[in-house]
Amino acid sequence: MTKKTADSPPADSRRIVSSRHLAEGEGWEMSEFEFGLIIVSNAFTRWVTRCMAAAGHPDLSSLEILILHNVNHRGRDKRLSDICFLLNIEDSHTVNYALRKLMKAELLVSDKRGKEVFYSVSDKGAELCDAYRTVRQQCLLNGLDMDEETGADFREIARKLRALSGQYDQASRAAASL
Image 1: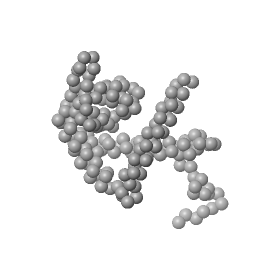
Image 2: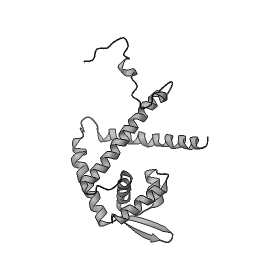
Image 3: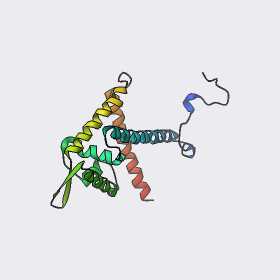
Image 4: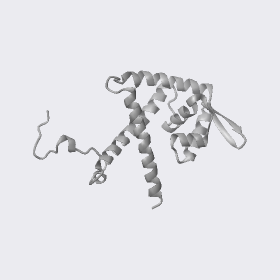
């Protein structure tokens, strides 16, 4: 056990942040939250790429993996704009590049309908998504302590994250207008 000295702050006043200059004054807790986002974002990116590598496709980026899963979602064809909207991606060029790479790898197929291009998962892409699911179950889900965190807990965290994404979107629009 660590001995507490007169100079050490109480445990509840410690600030675990990435940038001290952002953690001064009111709202410092948001900086602590943002540091948590940075860490979880990097861990999630590392996870999806390693999971996909274990599933048999080591050369996909995290964005390409997320797009593949999104196009596979519910077995419905998706347009570029649908994918960007659902993944909350502003730069459609990065999504378009990823779609071309996934098509070249024969994981997606496209169908032009009028002026719109619709994407769907190929048989090879569906098999890869299934293999990813198997690795995810084995390496991630089987390791979760569901006595500690319940499905309802994860749904509540997801709800709060979606709400916060709206706050960040609004703040980014405000910053763009400065």
